Every structure is written in structure tokens, then in C-alpha cells.
Image (cartoon, rainbow, N blue to C red; front, side, top):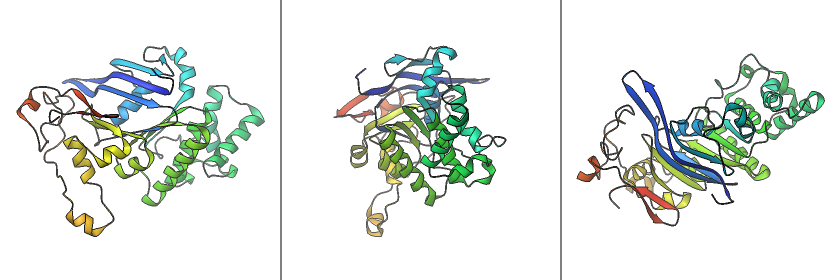
Amino acid sequence: MSGDTLLEVKGLQTYFPLDEGLVKAVDGADLTVKRGQTLGLVGESGCGKTTVGRTVLRLYEPTAGRIFFEGVEISGLSREDLLPYRRKMQMIFQDPFASLNPRMTVGDIIGEPLDIHGLARGAARTARIYELLQKVGLSSEHANRYPHEFSGGQRQRIGVARALAAEPRFIICDEPISALDVSIQAQIVNMLQELQESLGLTYLFIAHDLAMVKHISNRVIVMYLGKIMEEAPSEELYDNPLHPYTQALLSAIPIPDPKVERTRRRIILTGDVPSPVDPPPGCRFVMRCPQRLSICRKETPAVKNMGPGHSVACHLY
């Protein structure tokens, strides 16, 4: 593990038992996050993006695989031994309506990490809460209000302030803008970028919005049904997508130029995403792939290196 690597995940599997079998939510994921950078994680709903984030934080227990944070393996640590690492790794949740306790004031919500980790008490705690509110564009007057008194964008800012309270080095942003109005989304993303620059934060940014992921990420991983299909630097992935699934996703991004929009080719995927309880043999994408080969139904494609930092799991290469 190199010195500039903050998080490294190897062979991550997260399965959930059901009466009829196992839900293979994440099935062998490898990823590396460099210090001070943002790794984007994209894919359709149900592909395992959020499960990756929650398993990295040990909110879900990994079925198999290894998780290293700052060179220390945390995948097998007890709850007590994990506590110092929990302070360094925080999460901004997708739904700002469900992730804030409606019975707690904003001040108590933001102050909870300070209490758990013993970071501040009394007047210092209050001053820190006010400082965090101002960092995310709110005022100290908001500390005594309750979550229902705020808009969706303001609630997400409160969620960001709570994540910052423990002074983390790594934040998982789990679709932090998907529940917000379009006009508010850019404000939240710009705020996250400013905080990253001023505080030296590292992000795992999980999202559906591919245009926003390109804007904020240094590298991007594309997932489908628990498997990583492709990984590349942000510009490279958007300029030269190799996997048929990545090509289909990128073709769906609207372009604000009518001439370009009329001439470009859309790739429409047919069929539905298979069940993670009973995924198809071979390549996970085989049932919907417009370029499938006979080998795709039999063998799981190995990850192939296609250039500097660009890898793809596909039999076409």
C-alpha cells in the first residue's frame, strides 16, 4: 500500500441471507482511494454502490475481503478497536429527511459526534457547533431548531456539518444530492469541493448523475450487479468508455446542444437488471449487452489493464 493511498479494498463481498438464497449485493470489489482525491462510484439502482460504502465503514459486515485504512486492516476489528477509525471515516447519507433524528435539535445532532469521541464539552462544544454551522452556510441561530423546520438543501447541509464534526479524513458521500432540487444540487457539490480543498478531505462519491460525477471526481468506477465493470481517470472514462454498459450509461447523459443531441447515438438497453439472488453465469451484464459473445455466457471476464489507470472487465478486449 503506497503512502498516498488512504483506503484500499480487496476482494470485497457483502452477501445478505434470504429464505431463497443469498443476495450477492457486492461480489468481489477492489478499489483504491488516494489522499485528497475523489473516487466516483456510479451504476444503476441496486447495483451495490451504497452497500460498498456502508461495508467500508463497517455499518454492514463484509462476508469476505479485506479493508485497509491508512495501512491498517479494519475489516476484522472489534467495535471497540474500530472506534478511533470511525472518527476518521464519516458518511453523508442520501436522504436528508430520514437521516436526521426529528426529536433532536440541530445543535444536538451536530454535537453528538463531539460527545461520542470526547472532542469538546461545555462552551467549547457550543462554539464548535456554531463554527460547523457557519462552515456549511448556516447560522448559529439554527442550532436550537429541529430538522422539520428546514428545507431539503438545508437538512443536507446539517448532515454535512455532522459528518465534519469528528474531523474526519475520509467521507463517503452516498448520493448526497439525489433527493434535492436541481437548483440546490450544484450548491451542495460546490460546498463539498470547497470543504475538500480547505480541510484536505478525501471522498468516495456515490451517485447516479454521471455529469456531476465527472465534475467532482478524479477517478470513476462503474458497477453493475455487484461487480466492477470499468475504472478509469474521470476524463479518460468519459472520452473513451470501453465497456458496453459504460457506453450505454454515458449515452444517456443529455447534452445542452440541440445539434449534437440530434446526431449522437443513444444506446437503449433492453430487459431488466437480473436478481442479485440468482445472477447469470459468466458476465453479469450478458442478458442486456448489445455486443455479447458466446463466451460471455460461460466465463466471468477477468479485469484487463487497457492503459494508464484504465481497466475493464469485458471479453471484447
